[in-house]
Length: 552
Ligand code: BGC
Image 1 (spheres, rainbow, N blue to C red):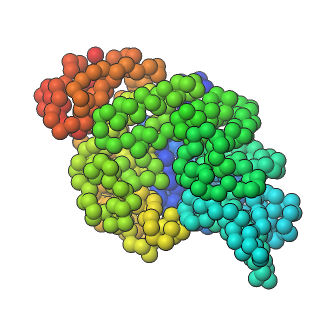
Image 2 (cartoon, rainbow, N blue to C red):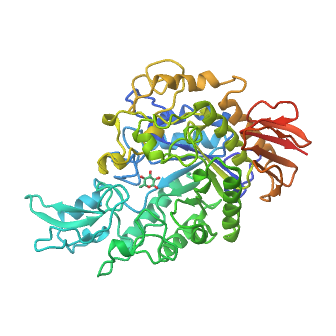
Image 3 (cartoon, protein in one colour):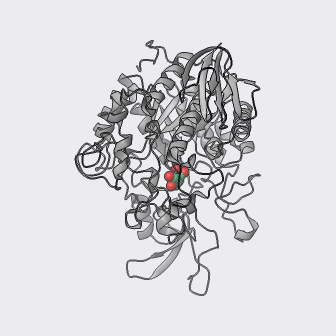
């Protein structure tokens, strides 16, 4: 039984509602065998570090066998570990080590697509059109006299088309298959009962191994309307845009919810029930269904992550997200960073409204990010986020104040966004650079050798060993904030307080107040016992771009 963080052994079935979940991107966390890729034993070796953060759970991005065509979100085998990252025994050891210190574990389930190296897809390519093997994916004949044109004009998330043509063993071109992401990620056919059954097997496989929760990748994409005539792309919103009414042939269709109701019945076979969080590109009005107790229980909202550094934007975002979660009787999720976006310490160092892709394409030169300002704001935003009711998701390295690496040279970029879009979008490699554990060494303590993405010389300034125990460091601020949150966490209610225009101020029902000054001018600190501050206070003044927690 997992010891509860409080030291008791009773299991609270609602533990997830206000949990802090730390995202580990396994190949960039810690490399135990000096091959340049982070691995599972590397994570196990850092369990004490995770414990020192007082997080409730760890979410592992995919660690399954994969060609890494999309950083592991191209899965060859859903029920195994990539040999470069370890073995199933290593996974069991990691679960045991985490559970021993009261940390729960989420794994990432990628149900929309497998990789093109999955045994099902290889069998499908070897089989004839119309065969049972091809029915596990979405194969269609092409248009044109010789089938030389894709079945329709639907674009992919990563590139120009969501269709790729197959080539037979003798070189003859054949049918086309659908992939909403990279060609190496063929979409599974969720109209096929065999696909449903296989994912139930996968969920049980990991739940039986002690996994506590699942992050469901691209949860809104599984069901598609492929009836002909296909809707031309002009008549539907862009593939990457949110539909609002369930009418889109590819996104957020109502039928997808049947899948998650079945998954819920599987989660509820376990004690305590396994939990899940949907990554669902659905507007707030439709997100609640994924997050309902009958389905996955929670759904990410990414609005805070998209919010500008602006008091009104933050407050409105928080109100919308809380209302959305309440409507489905779920709790809100908050996040400022993940493996798909520019790191928060860099975003907030740029003027509001900066086009982040253009910024990355300029290698971080236009405009130049104000690193000190970005870090100061990121620290304040983190404290604001951690005071909110609901669960908070942190991305590895955020606790170090790590900035984006915007100037990775083109030849090292691995993101299919860059590779497929002919250099029009730089992609997400800059937030996936391995963690600096030590100020010196070949890969700053990440491993005994190099790292799979180059780590810039300045990474040493952010190293764990430099910040560990150092008063005022970002790592120590995160630790103090997470400890304080754990001690003060109460019901999910929140009360707003009105302050100056540039201030976002609220309290929880036990007198815990969070006060963020988004402006540059100091704001008067209300009366109370100060608990923690993201920057030094000036007497009774809260300086600009600072959050303070106090108790009344
Ligand atoms: C993941 C991405 C991935 C995509 C396709 C996303 O939602 O977070 O990293 O590229 O799904 O699997």
